[in-house]
Amino acid sequence: GNWDLICWNQDQVSRLFTLYSLLFAHIFTCIIVSIMSKEFYKSSVVPTLLRRFSLPKITEKGDGKSSFFPEKLVEVWSTTCIVNNFGRDYVDAWANTKGRFVLINPSNPQLSGISKFPYFPRGGPVPESSPGGAQADWQPLGYVTAWGGMDVGTGMLYATSVVDGLVHLAGGWKLAVDIASLEVISGSDEKCPVGHAVETAGRGELKYDAVIHTTPPFYKNYDDAASMLRKCYAASLKLAFKENLRSGRKDKNEPGKDGGQTENGVVALPLLGAGGRGFPVDAAIDIAASECIKWITMDKDKVDVIEDDRGGLRQMTVAFGIPDLDVANALIDRMQIECECKF
Image (cartoon, rainbow, N blue to C red; front, top):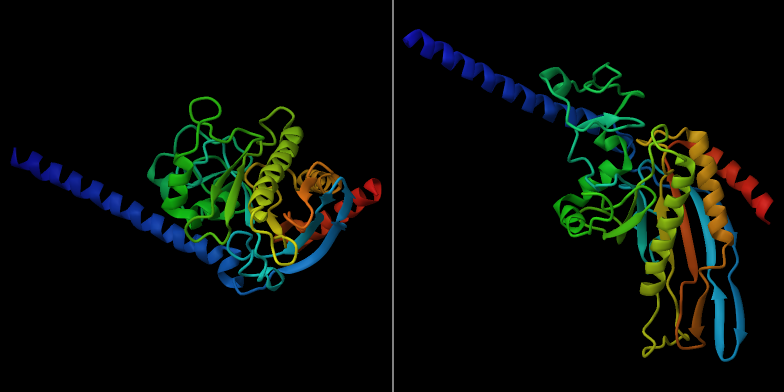
């Protein structure tokens, strides 16, 4: 009996040792990921504007009202991180802008961020349960290309490898509370189904006034993935600038001294679909370029205002923040082609 008790105690000690080993390995993994991230050693690199595409503001007067199209801009920036190294605090040209700064975040339907898995397969689909076993749980620099391991190159992604993971890390529990209050739109838990867009406030350490969450489809696991990605752009920009137009106006009972001076709106976004959702970069670039040039030429954002009484947005800016310079230049080239076709 005493020997059985000793063996049982040894087993418990072994289990405890394994538990602490996994905990240590998890902490070590987080440290390694932070060190490997681009923003760790390039956080002081100032974002650079590479190219701007614009459509001038047009004003039409009649019947005592002014109907105008705000100036629309599409910009491509080089930045180490669109979440933590972009926006008003990092771009001098935007320092004095009073309008809203919004980040478009490519999310998942449940808006669960990084809470479900420590890492996940690029291009999906995401497994129903977390990986099991000590080897799967703790390998920080693994070499397995299937689920249950870690391929730092192409097979798997850490939370800090994608925009959604960084958004949830920066937003913290306050962002989680906002997400918990959103209504379920589809199924039992989808608060942002594929192709939809929903908004939360810029919480925690996020450098944005608001975050528009949109869910791109998995490229290889969704019918008509390209069409659904286009819907992500359309829904996100519509929601972002709808709120900008609402918050950017002065109250009609408080006309500005300069006749209703207006505010600008800036919407920052990554190359949707090209990360965890597995879109080929070329395909993601084609869709991004065509949808944004399409947006810049649309007249559906026209705002009717009472002359000298109310104002609307003077500028509506869509700003891509791209870490890879080659990808950024490829996006610029594709946008130039789209412009030549449109204008």
